[in-house]
Image (cartoon, rainbow, N blue to C red):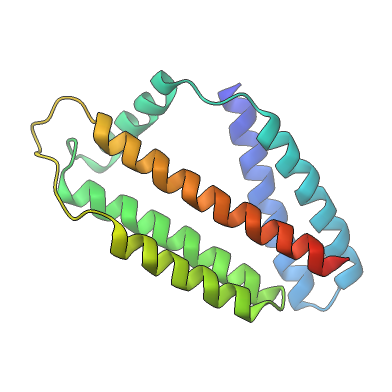
Length: 160
């Protein structure tokens, strides 16, 4: 299931890049077809069962090992923040490429708000259980998913 989910995510990312190129090239008919494929793929991703907490924990552990950090180490937090920042930047670029600069601006502002509201406390490096950190990440992920769903609904409404 995890492998299938990852394949779907990769395909979704590839289709997003393809749609961006088509929009930039002014090929709106083909971009609309790709947009429909993206919507279908998004529905398929949403229908996937949620990942077990154990699987999420293991993925976080692998990511930490990859950057050579322990739980709560500043370098890991910076890497995670940078990864999220890159995703937000890509979303903003995609919205601008789709001709939605106002929406792109709102996403940028919402991203800044989330960063500003995030607690600045550090988790001690020797802490054995990352529970609060995972809950914080889950909350931020839920918030970003809601933002993206709202944006997609608005895009669908604008397309009609």
